[in-house]
Image (tube, rainbow, N blue to C red; front, side, top):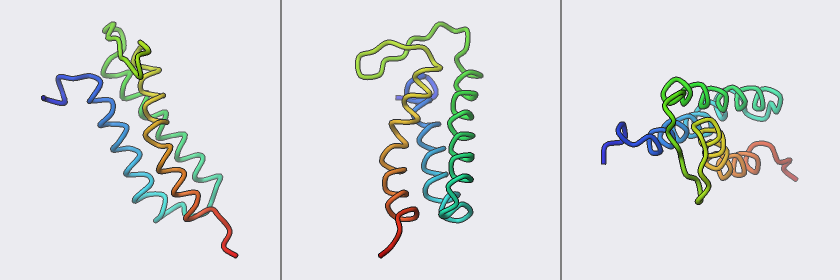
Length: 101
């Protein structure tokens, strides 16, 4: 299946790329334990995900399904980003933000 012809897989691939890039490269190298910077960059990445999805799918009337719920591109991009991000943020918080005793 071609990822470019499947809108759902395209948004999931974009979100996965953003999350993996942030949590495996950018955050460990440049953010570390700076929580305000982490929140800023993470917010910009999630906004970037929605902007990219908007450029690709706004006004096309494509419906996306997430766990049986039908939604438009905006909510699908936002919700899928946060669901992909959840395990990465949990591990990052444990490794870099928890205080070592």
